[in-house]
Length: 162
Length: 381
Image (cartoon, rainbow over all chains, first blue to last red; front, top):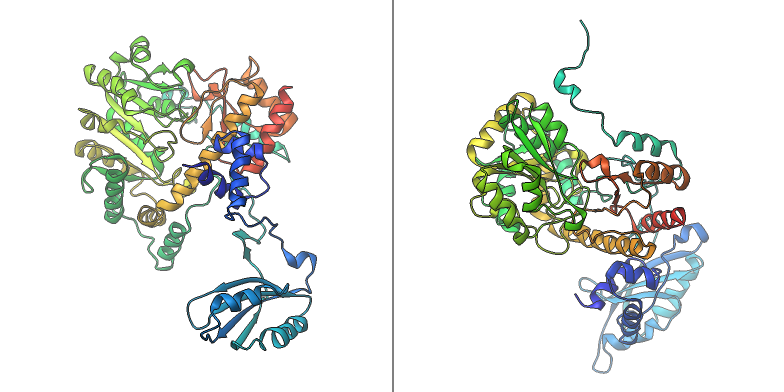
C-alpha cells in the first residue's frame, strides 16, 4: 500500500489527526506523513479541510436547499461554462453534473428562505442557458459527510469481558 | 437436600475477570481497554436480514446442525478464505457461539483421566470447559521470547506428548499472536507423531494483519484429527447474537451433535439468518473493520514503544500483550482503574505464562484509545 493510500482514508475520516497520530497509525514516519499530505494537496487530490457542523445548533434560521437545474447547451456553451459561472456565486455550496431528469444538482445556503428564493429567481434562473429550476429546502439533516447526527451512540458493551 | 457443588464444578474457580469488571463498573469516566469484543455494530445487511426474518415470523427451531443454507455458506466461505474443505451435510455444526462448540467437543471426546493440553495464555474458557468434561488439564506455556507462538520445544517440555487433545487458539486472545503455516508445521508434526487430536479455535481468523491465516487443519494429516471452531462474533461483530460453528470429520460432528440436540436443540434462528447474509454480502465491511483494527494496532504499539513499555508486535485479533510495568499486575490493573479510569486485564487471568503482562484491547475508537494511552503514560510516570 502506498503512503498516499495509507494517509488519504485517515484524512477523510478525521482531518484533525495530528501528524504524529497519522504516523503511529500507518507505520510511516512523521516526515513521510508530512510529505505525503503536501503532495496530496499540491496535486489537488486534497482540495481542502473543513468541520462537519450540525448547523441547526448554531443558526437554526439559516437554510439550505438542494436545487435541480435543467440547461440547454449550444455550440458555444457547454456544461463546464455554465458550471464555472454558477460556482462563482458565494451562495452556492456545492455543484455537480448528474445523470437523470435534470442536469445540475446545486447546494445553496442562505440566511432565510426568502434570501435563497431571491437568489434562485434573481441570479440563477435568469442565466440564459437555464431552462428550469426546482428548489428543495432541507428540513432536517440526519447524516452529513458520513457522520450520523443522532445521539445515543453509547458503548453498551460490558466494561470488562473475556 | 443441599446445593453442594459437584466435585467437578469445585475444580473450576470463579472467573478472574469478574473483579476487574466490578471495579470498572464503579467508575464513572472509565475508558475500557478490557473488553473481548468489537466496538463496531454488525454490518447493516446482516442486521437487516435478522429483522426481516423476524418480520416473516421465522422463529422456529432449525435443524440441529443449523439451517442448510447457512451450512452451505459456511463451507463455501471456509474453502474460499482458508482452503478448508468440508461437507455441508456431514461436517458442519452450527452452535450458540463458538463457545458452545468448544464445550461440546470437550464433552464428546473425553473421559475422566484423559488429558487436555491447553496452549496458554489463552481464552479463559478452555480450562474450565475441559475440567467440567472430566478431563485433566496440562498447561502448555508459550513464551514471550517466542512471541507467544506455540513451539515444538514447549510442547515437548510440557509433556504434551502424553495428552489426548491439544487446544490452540491463533490468532490468539489475549496475546494477539498469530502463527504462519511454517510455524504451525512443527506443531502438526508433533501432533501426528504422538497421535493427539487438535481443537483449533480460529474465531479470530479474519483478523490476521501480517499474513494470511492458516488453519492447522489444512496441514497434511491434520484434517482427520482436528476440530476447527469459528463464528460470527469477532469478524462480523455479532457477539450478542451468539453464533458459531465447528468443522470436523463426520463422526466427530455426529458425536458433538448428539449432545447439542439434547442441550441446545439448535442455535438461535434469528442469528442464523443474520449469518447467512453476513457470509453472502459483508466481505467489504469485514475488510473495513480489519483495516481500522490494523491502524489502531499500529497506534497502540507505537505508543507503548514511546512509553518504553516492552510489547511484542502482536499481529492478530484485537489485543496487544505488553509487559506490566509493575511486578504485581493485579495491583497495577486495579490502581489503573481506580486512579486513571482505564481498564485493562492482567495477563495471569488467561492462564499459565500470562503473569507479568497486561491484555490491552484496541477494539475502541481512536479518540478513546488515545486518551486511555495518555492516561496510562501519565500513570506510569
